[in-house]
Amino acid sequence: MGKRIRRLQRGFYCVVALLAALLPMTHGERYQTFAMECGGTVELGDIEAGYLSYSYDPGQDCTATFTGTSGKKFLLHFVTLDMGPDDSCDGQELRIYDGEQASGDLLASVCGSEQEDITASSNVVTLRLTSDDDSARGEFRIQYTMFYDSQDDACRESEDFRCDDGKCIRSELQQDGYCNCPGGADEPDGCEAGVSDSSEAEPEGEPESEPEPESEPESESEWIPELGMTMWALTGIIIGIVAFLIFTGVAVYFAIKHYKKGSIGGSPGPTTTIPMGQPPAYSPQSKTGPTPISA
Image (tube, rainbow, N blue to C red):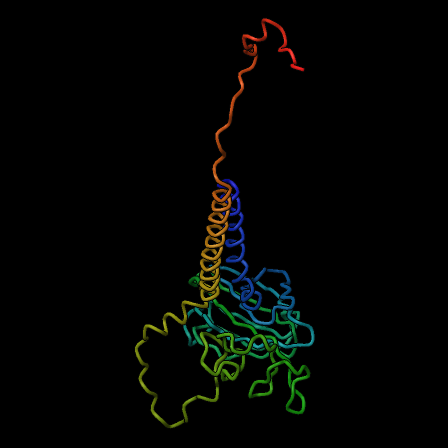
């Protein structure tokens, strides 16, 4: 009985570990990170929201093409941008082209630490990163979202979500903690990361307010996207613990039931042992023959 319980426990631990590993992947299917493959093409498949990232050293010239869902377009938002000074792109520059070739229409020339959102006209964009030998190391991280334009104020798929500016995104991207619509219309409760809202720019002529010191929650909100799906990993751990407690309770219940079942039968009674090989005892009458039968 003990060996059987131990085998069941080992199998249960394997199931819990697998569950904890698969739960983050459920969310990760939408927010995977794809790195630039210099000289190649990266197929994003049906993953309609995720990250494009690259960390580079001085003296690089890297070009990569990203292909998303057919019939949709790229919306690019820079989550991290560390590419030299903001006033010029001398020494290091990221060029984003609309289409498969770096000789196509130039959508943006990016450097410094800030960049507005970029919208492509198709499901293909090409990135070219150049840095000279005297430049410093740099990196960028772009959140991408695949969308299509609504028609007659409606999305062609009824279950899709329509942003305020007419972009349609997959319904699974709504209220997932990440802003995929300009202005964050898909996240009414706020988001950890996502596209910016250009409509909230300050009116001209008003003095710029002093930047507020970075608070504790803001730094943590930046930390979460970099690490990945921490919330989902925690959910997997909690589910694993609850499942373990349930399994342990069931195992104890059946162990007690098995023990009681063996006790109800009672212990076996005393047994009589007949010695083997011992001759039978004869009465005195056996020496004189059989007892006569009276008439």
